[in-house]
Image (cartoon, rainbow, N blue to C red; front, top):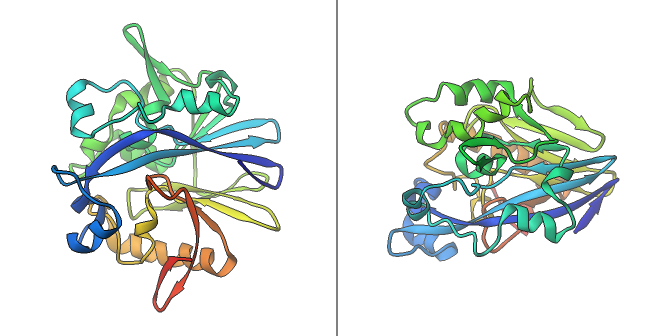
Length: 276
């Protein structure tokens, strides 16, 4: 647990899963990326699904929800889903909170590994996991996910987010900026349209929940971007701008998908960046 301004911040581990290493590192050659994160016999690398809990000012705010537990056996095998390591509700309880305590869920974007835990099965129905919470998504991204392009269609599973609208829990946001005192949203569109990053700050410290702009510490260098990104050159431009501020101002980057490194400060490295 760390504290920034009026907020207590908790790392919430929701499990591990696996994705193809080549897809995670795009044009970076395998001999380079495998030094950082080794692949299994199916060329998959182990990734975290690490969320952030922000508690203070009368609110319990969860950033992203992991992959959830609604998945069928074939899906779980393809993606190597491991909830023996940890689970969303189990990790929340470890730091003293129940799902009913959560007042707000900020979904960075609606790919299944970020929002699957937003809903759960209840009998034959799929309902919001956090029934007392408002779920915050960028309007532009919501519309993008509701009418998915062929490249991303398999990443948008509507059972993860349509029930939020049906139950009246969704709150659509129009752009970045102030979310609450000391919490700011930064909107980027290289990975997917209108993904929102979460910045928590005071006069002494800043933490950035980097989502899929910088999914692991290995992705800090500018050219190391995912093949999953819909606009990789835009990702590089967004990384340059945001990581430049992070390096110059000493922000702590919080990595959602790094199975080994939770967070790190970065620094400039010639025309790129590296973990300090």
